[in-house]
Length: 461
Image 1 (cartoon, helix red, strand yellow):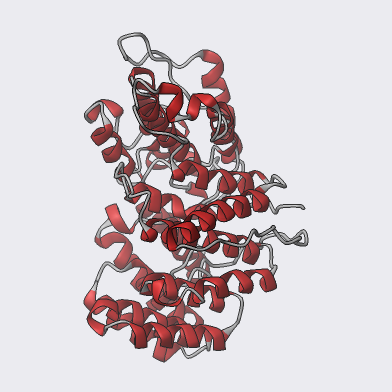
Image 2: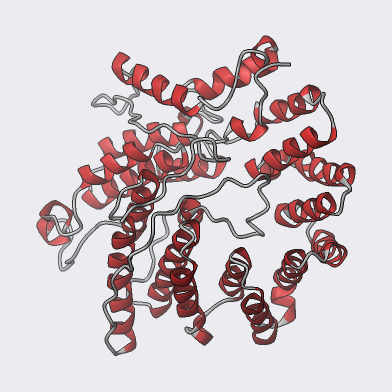
């Protein structure tokens, strides 16, 4: 089975993979990156910039500074030395988007960790950082080096003196989950098979807790499709089609351990995997298989939450299944109380109106969301796109500029920047000063993995 590879110029997905590591001496102090590694890193980052033209823009000091920071493998938005050298420090760096520093600190903590399961936890952080930095081959190599779930070195019983009475694999579930996602982005054939294998494992455990068995599923054969890059990043409708978006879900849980015997834990894991598989099928334009997976989520009935149900409805909109999306959105409003789902319901109505080209109605729904939450990026983005499609590009630009400059620490997102720069191109031939203002934002609060290609930099003035 052929898997589609993301385009190198796709917003938010720079190309270029490889290894990033820092030597750590016996005392845990950071030493210099080897010359060969530095050269490799710089080469990888040069590849990731192959679609980011430089010459004209590099004549400007602000632009040059941003590019130097972006190219430097050790220049992070926050240094690892600024935080505590422990799990709390790692969480701080991850929440700040300081992924280069996460690689460094996680490497140090891995070396210093005494317990095997702590080492795995820190290596998971390294892999997450590699994924966020689009270093997929490096992440894959790290995963392979860790070994299989049932390798003796990864089993509790191998270290009976450290874990008396505990058995089974120490591999964190999040690490198992990331593996097929990494395969997908490397374009490796076993991606879907790996996803279904994990789904079978999770479903079996879930059914075991419920008291009955689970059927074994095989990955259906899918045609070789390729993802299309949109002219504007409006396809998300609040639900990203990036299979790796769930990395943020992993980060959000921090280092909290789940109750491995709780039905809710395994139900949520099952939903996450099914949703990921459906997303992959949509990206491959295999809509029949995607619908089958989405229906499996819907059929779980009472075990769903409004956010997941809404996400399913929005994926239905992605593939043009308007009636199915409408049914799901109605289910959300009928099943859950209004106070808890008001913003969710307003967004769903806005997306439905947007999909039906009812821009005035959609604008009204998104405006209500922004009244409740003025910093709601998804609502602002879609409201701006409604104005754009209605022919008012000036109003669309005003909305995105307002949300972007209001609180860059939370609103500086690649899809917003990409859409805004696209609108600049539509509105004027002289957009250098406007883009430069955005670059000034990127210089300070942007995370390490912010993709400068979202600025759509021109090759010449």
